[in-house]
Image 1 (tube, helix red, strand yellow):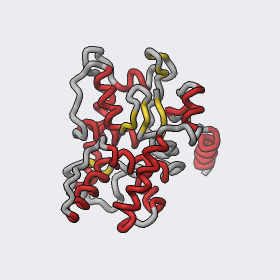
Image 2 (cartoon, helix red, strand yellow; image 1 turned 45 degrees about the horizontal axis):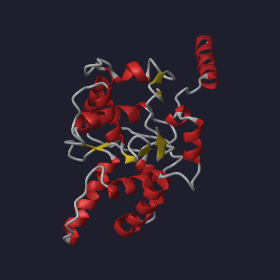
Image 3 (spheres, rainbow, N blue to C red; image 1 turned 180 degrees about the vertical axis):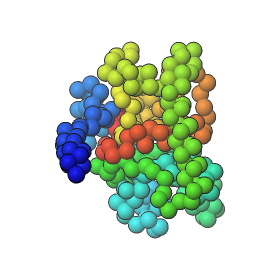
Image 4 (cartoon, rainbow, N blue to C red; image 1 turned 60 degrees about the vertical axis):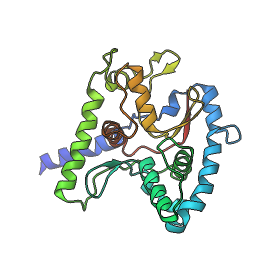
Length: 256
């Protein structure tokens, strides 16, 4: 009994003294970019959010109602599809919904992951979900086969995060675990928690998804760049989101 009380005391002590040291990428921005991010009158992301709100009313509200109704769902992507064959992030889901709607109305406009309409809807939905905590997990009601596949994709993402690649011969972890706060050219290396996507990146002069940012990292280490929407990119996103579970979503946001 005495041993039990000792363990209980240690557990409570750890519970009260442990602190989450994970930080959003916003922390690593220059004061000028932080000011731009925090000013709704000057923040360029507002243009995409505004369009996304209009698209929601035109394309989504008849099925889903108010955008606030899906904010918790936004924080739970990526997810494994019902058949277990693909990992789907929020932009993938928007594309699928748009394509179903286009087929139903015999519309000819096609969707793409980085299209203006997809990114606008993503920006508006992430804005609605601002303040929600990331909660990405396999469904508790999923079959054993589904759960096993989800875990396999997560393990693949972790392996990619730890694997050296490209002519620079670096893995994600070498920068985002081992060099946090250091300068890389004009950037400050962050912890790579994807709480702020989609992002308006000054170097792009437009909005982009996490998929695009990951491809830019492949380019940065001079590795072959996976095609948009590839399994490797989705596995990496899954690992990064699970790694950030419990963190507050603060996007869409600005990056240098």
